Every structure is written in C-alpha cells, then in structure tokens.
Length: 472
Image 1 (cartoon, one colour):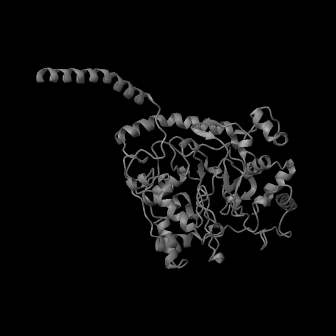
Image 2 (cartoon, helix red, strand yellow; image 1 turned 180 degrees about the horizontal axis):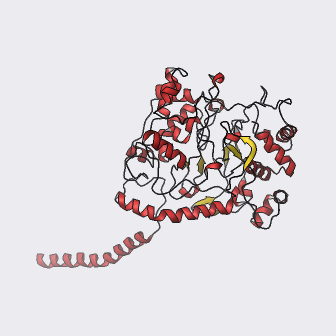
Image 3 (cartoon, one colour; image 1 turned 90 degrees about the vertical axis):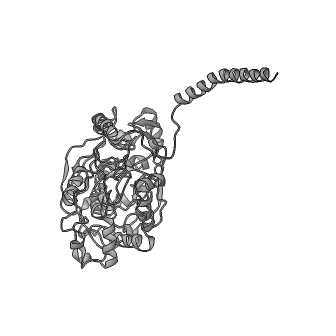
C-alpha cells in the first residue's frame, strides 16, 4: 500500500514536470526576445573586458564620424569666413554670415519668415540647422574636447583627454578664441590677466599669487584640479585608453570662459531626449541667478556642488560612487570655488555707456539703428535687458510649432522647452550659440529669433541688429 502511494506520487510529480517544462521554456524564450526595458540607470557591471570594448568602439568610430559630419555638412556652411575688422578680445577673427542652409524650394530667409509656423511645419521647411544639434555620438554621449585643448593639456600636464571612441565635431574657427582672456571684477585696471596662457594646475599660482586672496587662490586651485568623471576615470567603462585622473572644471570652462566642449545634459531621460550642451561661459556669473541645464539650481555654489556630485556622472549617483565621486565640502571648498568664479567679468565693451547702451559719440550709424531694432521691432529686450542683457528667467520658443518630431542620429528632434535667458554681454566672444550650439554665428542667431518670434525683420534690419550685438 505504501509502495503504491509512493509510485503514484512519483508519477504525478514527473507528469507535472513534463507539463510545466514547455511553459517555463516558452516564458524564458519570450523574455529573451522581448525588447530591452528602458531604465533611468546606467549599467554598473561591465560584461566585456576593456580591450574588447576598445576594439569594438574604435572599429565603429569611422562610420559614426562619417555619419555625423555628413549631418553637419547637410545643415551648415562650415567654411572659414571671418568678418573684416571684427575680432574677439584677444584678436581672433569673428566668423560671419548665416551658416544654416535654407531648405530646398525657398529662395530667401525673408520668404521663409513670411510663412506661418503651420505652413513651415506642413511643408517641412524648418531649416535643418535650426533643429536640435545631436552629440557627435548621441547614443553614447559624454564629454568631448576640441583637439587644441587636448594638445595643450597633454603638453602642460601629461593628462590625456583623448577619447578612443569619438572626436569633437566643429572646426576651431567656429569656436571661442583659445586661450580666452580673463577679466576680474576686483581688478579692472589690469585688463586681461591670462598673460595669453591656459590656466592649469601647473601655472595658476604664478599667474594669480598677489592678485587673488588666499580663499580665491584655493578656489582656483580646485577649479584646475582633475577629478573623476564619467568618461575619464580609472574604471573599465571609461572612454580613455589609460586610467585617468579625470577632468577639471576649467577643461570645459577654460580660463573661466569656454572652449566649446560638448556633452549631454544629465537631468533628462531617456537618452534620445537628452540635449547636447554647449559649454556656457562663466563670465558674469555674479549677476546670474539660474544654473544647470534645466536651471533648477539657484546659486553658483549649488551648481558647483552639483557638477561634481552628479553632472560629472550623467546625473547617476550609483555610477558616481563606482567611478570615484569627489564630494566637495560646502563651507570651504564650494564657497572658495564660487568666490573665484564670481570675480570673472565680461570683456570690455568700449562703445557702451554706464547704462549698457550705445554711446552716440562712439557708435556707428548702423550700430545705433541696430540698437533701435533690438529695443523695438526685434523685441529682443523682452528678455535681454541692459546692462547685462538678461532677465534671469526661463522662456520657451515653442519651436515644436515648426516641425514634426523625428529621430536624427539617435537624437529625437522635439521642442526645446524652457531655456535660460543667457546674458548677451561679450556675445561675439562666445560662439556657437543657443544651449546646444546649433547656431554657429550671430547672424544665425538673429535669423533663428526672427523666425520663432515672428518679427519679420527686413534684411537691412537684421544686418543692423547684428552690428549692434557685436558691440555688447
């Protein structure tokens, strides 16, 4: 009796197993073939060994580069065409002309501006150069440095900012001058204190000892000290061939200004909706009140602390812990760094009076006409108020009125949402323009705003406005 019961149970269990096995296999197979679930977190554990990753990404690099450069050529005129007699603070020629290409079938920018947003959208006539600009490899992202900065830091410090997987995209003549000048609010009598050098850990003390107080010197030291970052660190998911000390604040904000270094915002997910970032200048941060890519930070101290805790690591604290997050001490380190940054001044604007307006005795007739357009028909002063030409607010251009959402090189083309009103002081020293660098010249910027604001400026009015903006 007991033996029969045991055999019955055994047969029952075997039968259940045979019945359940196909169900389990089907469920496992369905799970294996299902699309990868979108996550806000980056993968922490790397499955491939480092050399395999390097070989794969280096093999993919030429194709990715070719695809991105084809996009730039389709959108822009990238030629070297400086404006005669117009230079940045240290003498680099300012590039001129509208570089975004007109859409096929439109003969002039004035013809395009006469159309309604609905017509432009329906006919697909929004200029491709006015769409969001993708990262050089948008699905990958991360900091990418111009080659001239990579070369300088390698020469001074032996620290290599080269990525094995991709290169910077925009030509040097369309970027800020290098090295940029440094002007201090505390010592305007000294003018440019950079001595024509890129400030690094190797030379900061010699350049600024006797000009800054000890707190400010320590703040500057921290700004030129390398700390681990998403792509430059010692882990096996870095993007430098050798383990790296990291990057400095001034690797992007070189000399407290900008060198055009790009990466992606850390506070948007998923990847295809993240904006490319053009490094903004730190000049004049003492008069600004909104910081961070989405302007959620209300002081330069908040921004400084956030950068190395989160923004350096794509806003992922898990990855930050793995790669070596640098937790700054708020009462001394953050405060000292912020105090130095608050000293960084705008470049001189000799044609402006104490109210930030043109001095009629110094300005040309065209520049004065451009000032009238700025404060009148162009409606620029609705956001950009003198003397620094910002209102410290956020505004949306609602660019989604002009085009249908679509994917380009892994980046979803959608409206930009609210963006910060950047100060226009020193504008000619800070190309390219808009938060993602899609506008290569001041002329592009004027044309873009003429379309999104519907101001319908004439060709002459736009030229006059451009002349005025170069004076700021």
